[in-house]
Amino acid sequence: MTDYDSKKLTELVLYILCKTGGIDFYHVFKILYFAEMSHLAKWGSCIVPDEFRALKYGPVPSHLYDALKELGHSRMKLSEELSEVVQVAGEDAPNVLLPRREANVNFLSKSEIDALDQSISEHDSMTFGQLMRKSHDAAWDEANRRVNGTNVISPISMAKVMNADESMLEYIEEQLQIEASLR
Image 1 (cartoon, rainbow, N blue to C red):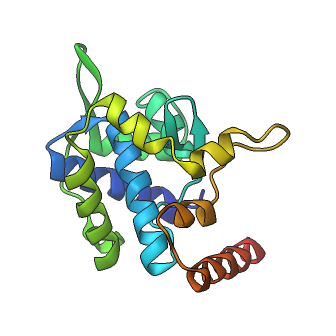
Image 2 (image 1 turned 90 degrees about the horizontal axis):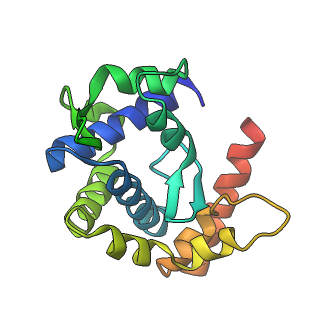
């Protein structure tokens, strides 16, 4: 993960926390997942500079998940950045995150903000069970069922869940190939 990716992921989390007034990890992960799916299907590009993995309770952005588990106790760059701008609500609510500052929206495009706002309005008040059922979609299922591979959820599969047309799926595939060749 590059420094820019780490900063962008931090600002994405802060944006969600500021809009919701604070929310638990699980809701942050699912809000990001559904915003990512929507943005992929509409614009053909990812919002979240992280890979979503299919875990038991649904998709999670893997680096963010690891960083939040280690919040304040890790040498991970992302965890350090998050520790500076996010705080845990308290001992009685250790999974609830509160923002320490406003998000720097210069890291987010208008289309990304729109996708995040839509996802927040649809998902911030859903229960754990509702989010789990909704996020156990075909993209999650495909990644979860892989036997000898990774549980990374394909951006193409995510766009398919949102009924992206064939030309958009081809565009996403081309963009992923370009990205991979630049690494």
